[in-house]
Image (cartoon, rainbow, N blue to C red; front, side):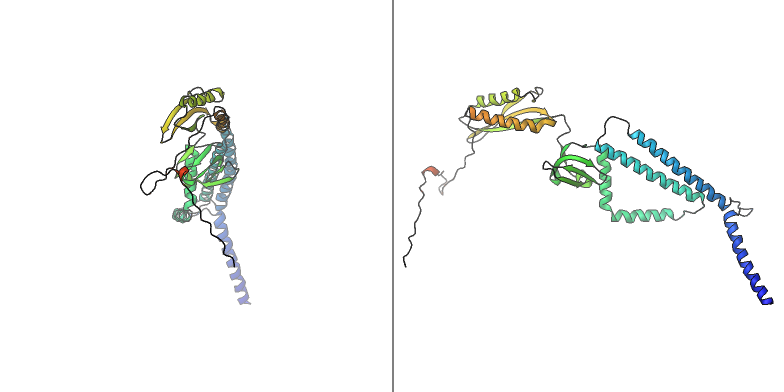
Amino acid sequence: MNGWNEFWSDVGKFFKEIGNQLYDFWFGTGTTEEPKLPYIASFAIALVVLVLGILLIKLILRLLRKALKMGKKSFVKDRTVKTFAINTTKVILYILLFFIFISILGIKLDGFSTILSSAILAVGLSLQDVVGNFASGIIILSSKPFVSGDYVVFVGQNVEGTIIDVNLLTTVLETVDEQKVIVPNKNITNNNIINYSANPIRRLVINLGINLDGDKEKVKEILLKLAKDDKRVLLDPEPKVVMTGVSENIFTVSLRCYVPTEIYWDVIYDVNEKLFDLLVKEKIVLGVKKLSILNDQNKEIELDKVEVKTKTRGRRNA
């Protein structure tokens, strides 16, 4: 009987010790040398801070959204910047709240910095292209070499079209044949960019090659009148017709004028069509580059005087 009493006594002591340890963990105030808040109190404080922090973050994000909506301009690119700013702020605030929460709980973070640096290094090595595109996206969004609706040429990529959207990793554009092209941001910042929409006006150039015996002044008069009669062509800068070159059998005359960028293609199509009709009406002959063929004595061969001899082979009768 004494053995059973001792057994149950040991069992009671075991559970009593566990209870004391649990009580000390949650409600203990530490020793007189190292007093501390009861863990249940720390947990309650951390929980209150967590709830209040979440509410505060939501309030900050709401105020940030309202602040970013101020202004009349609303480009696609600007919307991307707004989204990025809100998401980045959200992540930073939640990470900060997480560290405050676990620090109140008394969790030690001595080795966290080492773990974080190792994780960043590993992720950076495995996602070099992603990081590069992300950094290039930040550069594009901050420096603004183009905005939504601009017609651009990415020289190194042999791609051109109208900008549709600028994301953090890629830029989306639409070609003239309605094709959607997605270009990594890193490929854009590492190459030259031609933005045809950056300036409000664009120069229109039409070159004509005329035979040397053609009427130069008449051709210049036709081109200049064609430009001045079109009300879409700007008078400042003034349209000009200049002679840009003379070769063996032709001279080149160039019309140079300026039009609003947004109607450039409409104007150049109309001007070319009207020019064709005027050239036919005035019987202006366009020049053709001459091709000379030399014989073995380095003399030019006159093709119209060359006799072409053909051989006719008879058919054998069986």
